[in-house]
Image 1 (cartoon, chains in turn blue, orange):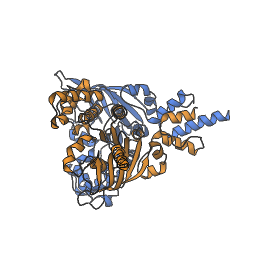
Image 2: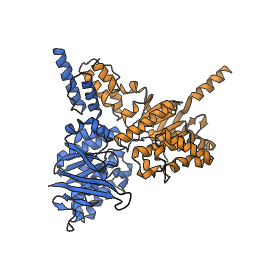
Image 3: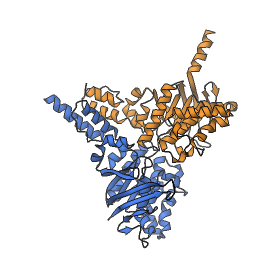
Amino acid sequence: MSIKTKNLTFKYSEGTQFETKALDNINIEIKKGEFVGIIGHTGSGKSTLIQHFNGLMKPDEGDVIIEGKSLKDKKTKLKLIRQTVGLVFQYPEYQLFEETVYADVAYGPKNLELDENEINDRVKYALDLVGFNYEEIKDRSPFDLSGGQKRRVAIAGVLAMKPKYLVLDEPTAGLDPSGRNEILSQIERLHEKSKITVILVSHSMEDIARLVNYIYVLNKGKLHMEGTPKEVYSNSEELKRIGLGVPQIVDIMKELKYKGLMVDTNIFNIQDAKNEILRVIRGNSNV
Amino acid sequence: MVIMENISNIKQKNIIEIKNVSFKYGEEENLAVKNVNLNIKKGEFISILGHNGSGKSTLAKLINSILLPFEGEVIVKGMNTKDKENLWKIRSTAGMVFQNPDNQLVGTVVEEDVAFGPENQGVEPNLIRKIVDESLKKVGMFEFRKRPPHLLSGGQKQRISIAGVLALNSECIILDEPTAMLDPEGRKEVMDTIKMLNKKQDKTIVLITHFMDEAVEGDRVVIMDEGQVKLEGSPREVFSKVDKIKKYGLDIPQVTELSEELRKEGINLSDNIIHIEELVNQLCP
């Protein structure tokens, strides 16, 4: 089971002089259980791509196949697709509107016309998944919470629909470091615990490096590069050329190697960097 | 007389003086800003850090006279923000750039947007043309002057916002998380513009940010928590206090954290590394 795009192309302002290909012949397959990252500069097509994953947008050319169901097929029920693939937009806390956290998270399941008990269970399940104590949080107003907490409530609202795939568009934008950590560790836990497939769109190379197993790099609507974080971040010059960067640690390791310390440069977290530098320095002094 | 002269000299040097300022929103019990004292010198580049709700943005709005102190006073270039007559002068002296580029551009064409401020000030049309062109050149956006803003990238939009502030001839630019919504390239564009305006045009910069690698670029870092200034000093001084910074819910730059980890293992490094080159030079002399 997977989300698969086949020669996916999408054009804006088709037929006018402003026609632009927002997506140009994209072929990818995200399998169940994976944790993938999508990176690319503003306007590279990331948001357009993820809106195809749950049928908010439909391909102009090519196709998107979600768990075997084609977006081109008229028999495909979009309502079902949207339950299968949950999409968390940028700044999702702006979409909170109910008086209590409970009511807000319950809004989606209620629209599915589920019975009271099932709704109740789902709200509990979703709030627990994003790390809240259900009893403590359920009656509070979402508007009295911190930025990070609001965002977790918004994510819970999507999780209450029990999607198999969770797509997050810039989930840490605008949060302070502890809010960022809060969200990222919850997403990490969520992926481990519920085995949900996570698709993370982010401008933060550090966040991507920390979490995902596989990266897709978009540039001008095309799939420019793909691979494991190690493979992708080893092309730091190329990433910078297309308006992206690498985690600061990669820059440090490259600079050290350039200056003659023979470290492995395929490293992007502090712990590994520390161990690698110690290995090389201590190895040298033993000689 | 000599004493009087000294006092006025000191006053000239500080473009912003925040004296015992407290502020609370409406009927709320807690103070959002609690007895803050802070002077900002003309030409200084100061970064304000703190977790969400620490009072950073409130402080910025107090400087700009969007909010007025509950206690104490804020003086901008000798003008008290409480005096209503000073309002527009204060706002053009200390111009503000906000987080979301889409919420602050009003024109349908880039140059119209930048002209908005001077037009409202009643500046002569010929002069406006000149001011707009110069402002756009300073942020490297002159060639985009005829474009509609919504077709620009986030970094370009923020540079247009900065040009709008420059068109008011602001001496001080207050930026409230200007890069939060931008991609790496956009962040770099905006930071390069800020640094250039500070170094070459002598603009005073007040940068509110969650990114530690941006804060190290300034002359001084102020850390706020629970409405108070908790730490203050050069980036080097402030970021060497790793434990304290983490206690306030903030991060330190990755290079500082790595250096700290290596020091704990007995590697001989200085305790105040904030730039990549410093670590590299100390490890590979």
